[in-house]
Image 1 (spheres, rainbow, N blue to C red):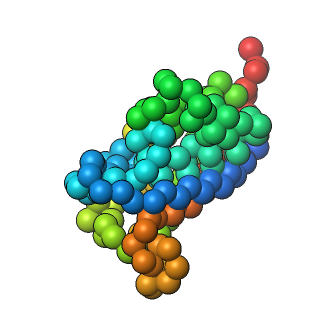
Image 2 (tube, one colour):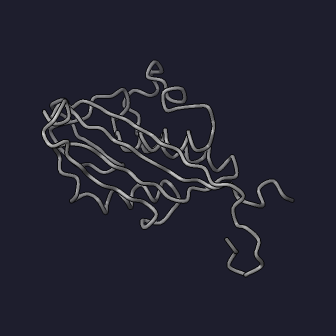
Length: 178
């Protein structure tokens, strides 16, 4: 891959990919956030933090790609009272900062959420914009899809939802060069 100036120098020295997964059950009351966007009122995702499964899956994907040896549970343990009700988009932002400290940049992210309800398609653009802002990429670098489980299993019975995320990061070629 040549840089814009045509010098033939590679802009990135290495690409890395991470995969994340998260699931939460539903409970009555409260508000549900996915990717930092409120998608339901009167139902929430049970979790120690705010339960944003999209942010959680992306955080784990980023930490995996960065090779940090951490996951969301080790960085933000549910045994720490400071994480009770914590904003999951803040946790995602801290994972992005960890990536940047390793002289890497986020290239793109792709998220699939599996749920019977709420239908997330009407929130797709808002979620993509919200995630792009935290990841430091453009909206066109973030994919977001909603799928059902065709009525099968715990998701099909409407007990909760699951989310999968893939992210690609790149080590900048001149990282560490003076």
